[in-house]
Image 1: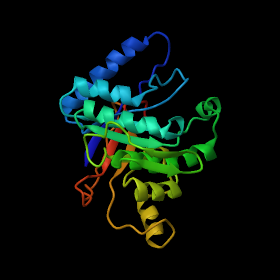
Image 2: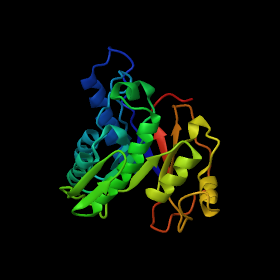
Image 3: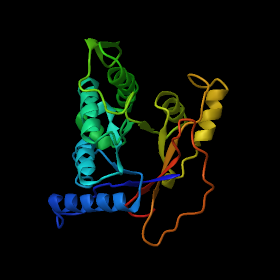
Image 4: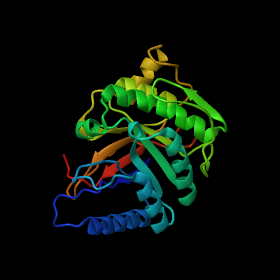
Length: 262
């Protein structure tokens, strides 16, 4: 099992400047690198004081430059907020600048406050996520890729530069429902969830649904999953049997958050 650290960039009040917060975040990232964490993850949120992190990709490039081995991830890139034509090139560039240490988490977004101000709703967000993922995969792996969809259409286009990791950096999808988990495992090959909220679904259940024809296609292999767990200084992690690695060598991951315990 690999351990990752989620760095939420929380700013509780004006007594801490954003510059001071960012200095603390970088110190935490360096400590995670030295402690042997597999990945440090950064969020994307807009127009709220509580999360001072509007650009995970900028954080990832900065964190990679300040460390020597830890991987850097987005948890998540809110795909409905982006033009995928631009985002594909930025992912490729960031992966090169990070020496091939990028992990890309994607999702629809969860803050209604942000949705309202960006002029979208859950239905639009869901459609943009699913089509956006098809577009990103096409642009990251092909030249002269074209697309004709409900939310985005364009003629032959080539994303420049392509990522250092081939065919592209590992992609995770934030998922909170059985339907999304099934789609995520089928499309991206990896799902990211939060065990703190005691979801009633399981990844295994989504796999069984797909195997019984209740999804786009049956599973041909095992898929890595990531589960989030917020801890504080007095928490202890329960002992768990280590799951087997997926056929591609990637193992399940436990994502530890630095926020308050719930």
